[in-house]
Length: 138
Image (cartoon, rainbow, N blue to C red; front, top):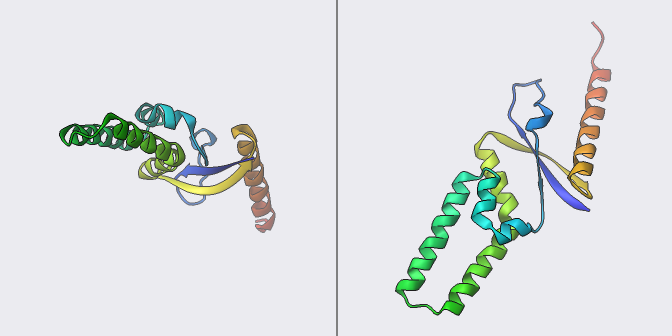
């Protein structure tokens, strides 16, 4: 079972966001983020984070080159940063979504994203039915 955070765009009070605009982010280790970090961030539309991550890698390489750090040490540092991005990449994408006006609204559990979407929308429809039942008829 995986845990997914649900991010929805801000809308006017009483308005519901379009289902295709809702984003589900899986918590946990991301192999694509680990293997192809900046490209994965750009693919996920986290442009600022992708740019900063690339600048960080270039800056570390330049500093290591100037200080004549061994290639083994540079490799271990790059590996450690890739592991960190693998674990925290989805949170960075969530931060980027927050900058674009999204709000973390819910947490759902499912074996895969399809099951998480089903659980979220089922719960959302049930809550809407309850709200409609509570409102008095005109």
